[in-house]
Length: 131
Image 1 (cartoon, one colour):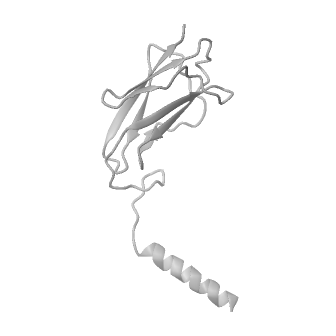
Image 2: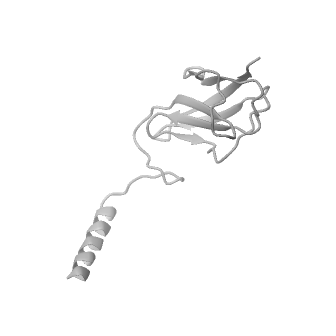
Image 3: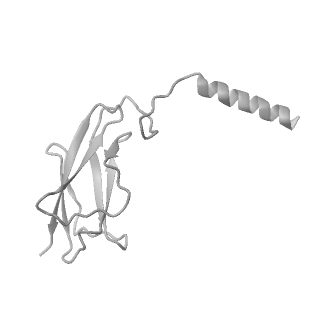
């Protein structure tokens, strides 16, 4: 009886999975109809995973810039950026570990890609060290 029940469950799950093709991107993420594309929050953490910001980041969604003031003495070569994006959006390049922000003359850029994968906005991270 248990085997019969398992077979029915497997057949139902297989049938339900095959009835509708769900669009996914190259990362295996669901492609949706959402065209919104922006950063809603930004955090910058040090090697101890504590914030290095002196105040909240200023995010300009029109100019696509993120201005962050960090504490004096912050190790800019070993920071962990964290983005909060609009629903269904993704970030390129992916953040996989520590990031070097020490070249203040050439700010790092990240591209936010909308849920429908048609809208792209590149944000520059502008860092200022507190005096």
